[in-house]
Image (cartoon, rainbow, N blue to C red):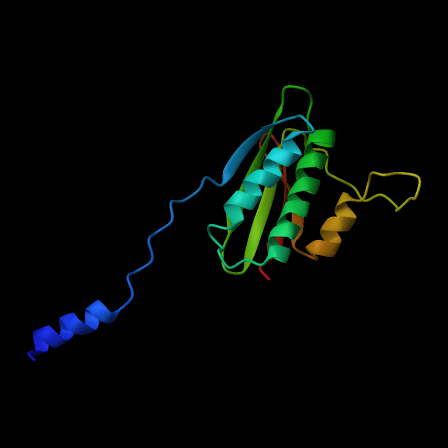
Length: 152
């Protein structure tokens, strides 16, 4: 067996390289409508599996909950009818970042827990799920609220 033939035999024994997956968009514009939270969750569910195909179900579930909180709060407190909310996702081997932009600069604020209200728990949820991994920043036309979910 010639050396060239031996190299071809060894190469043919190697598994074929994985077929690259087409990149998915990582930005979604949403109407200021309560139903947009569901659209955002569907988008996140589809997106996270591409850059992080081995992400656990728990990781995806936490990303979905964080997305629901950020989008719902943005629509409820950061928009008026006709405004748009922008959802931006970014994932790598360590974390998934969920970022929501809205046109209002007013920052979210913590509220005391109350059994009388069914609202006002969003920041508590972010603190629990993304400790020290979320922030609010000003943008030229509003604000961005982001949170990073560690890959589990």
